[in-house]
Amino acid sequence: MESWLIPAGPVTFSEEIKKSRFITRLAHTDGISACKAFLEQTRIDYPDARHYCWAWVAGIPNDSQMLGFSDDGEPAGTAGKPILAQLQGSGIGEITAVVIRYYGGVKLGTGGLVRAYGGGVQQALSQLPTERKVALTEYTLQCDYSQLTGIEALLKQAGGLIVESDFQAMIMLKVALPQTQLAIFNAKLGDLSRGSLRLSPR
Image 1 (cartoon, helix red, strand yellow):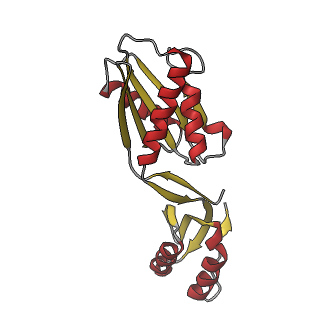
Image 2 (tube, rainbow, N blue to C red):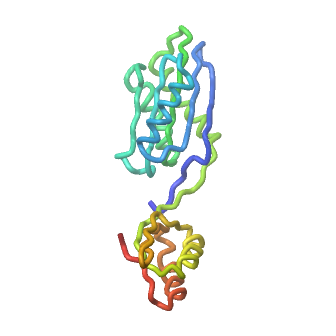
Image 3 (cartoon, rainbow, N blue to C red):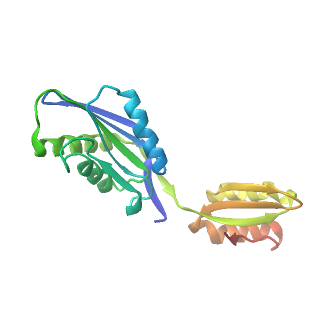
């Protein structure tokens, strides 16, 4: 995927269903460790809840290796899977949904639970601000000190960035930029350096 949607900010949606309170939290989480950290923070923020059911899409939306979900003590298939289904249906990546449940004493049944967990996430997603993330590819580049400012300006125009820099006799740069900008960037790099500079694949 060249680009995909990610959350531009967190959302919290709360509703009461048959005396149980369901609080849905969505957040941008890039990578599984960020997902786990958000889940742990939610447990701290709502310490006395009965269940913390969750699902995440920790990377790009179509990467099945980056999916996870849990029913956290609810009947199997009634919480984690409906939450994940909503996230996958949204086409949004790098997102975690945690649904906190305060039990109110009335059982909802399996169908009621699926509707409550999936429905809360659906409502929260409808309020979620998103932005588009463009996939970046990494390259290496060796340049003179005098060329660095020009390279930084070209990267900014291309929506790229410097990932790492090593200042020796020459500067060794690790840069990342969108694939779609590669040809234009290389042409401008050639103009800047009179043909002496070129990106190398990592």
